[in-house]
Image (cartoon, rainbow, N blue to C red; front, side, top):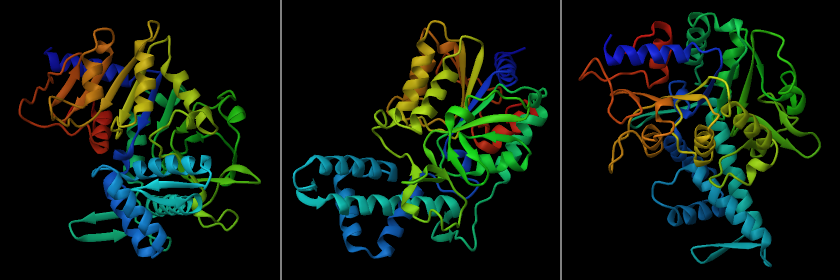
Length: 391
């Protein structure tokens, strides 16, 4: 058995573990016609411009000139959140962008408009090929769930009877509902922290802490919120059907795109979600934590993972399906490079990239030598789960 075959066998053993957690990011929804961060940013910019609110357009342009050139929409919202906080503390209830003052209401108006634009785009889909745009709408959504269903079938139907075990947990930073929708269609019961049916109220103490009695019941933690979560003064946090008029203010969608995340994670719902995240990571029993579509661009999440890995009693192994992005001395990305080379826990970190499989080293092992592998993609991961072979 060569080094590659040995590593693949080791990787398959981890993926057959009866204690495993998955963290998904935007990359798994790309094939479903939900845009990645920068296309989403461009689409939001277009929506804000076409809406014709001159003050929103003015503030958005001021932000664009104030932020770094490659800033994305989550960073726009983070900056707006900071400005709103400054305005709340100031005497005149204003904050300055490029030496021009904007009052708190104006800043909140743009913040709400951006959140609404994100919600509409993620709900109904958006795709751009060259100059051709396909824009989903309520009447004609273009979001496709097929890749998520294929993944679940590969995970549960081909991996050593995983459906007979309940120690599988799902986390996602995505706002879309594709994972829970696909789980429902596959007759998998989803516990998401809400009590109720299609309309639900946030009740994490009951839902997440109740004893799992069904072997086909799994917890799903949406770390950044969701397009079907709404804030409401009377009912609190509600999970609502699309198209209802009970909670019709789309700007009250509960999503969590903030760069300064520490303070917000001390409040519900995010306090409950991140408490569960830490609990799963800090395992004294053998445990595998798998990522796909996650860019490792969230410092707060990365910090939680790294803190767990550094714990002397921790037995969590990390498996990241991730495409390398080499530049400026970086082989994969800054975070994964550092973890792989860490002398204390590098042996517990695996990265499945297009150039091969990395473990405790920045040198990929690849039996195909020059052939690039596709398992870092969501569709490629699905095929790997089916066959156990890297392609």
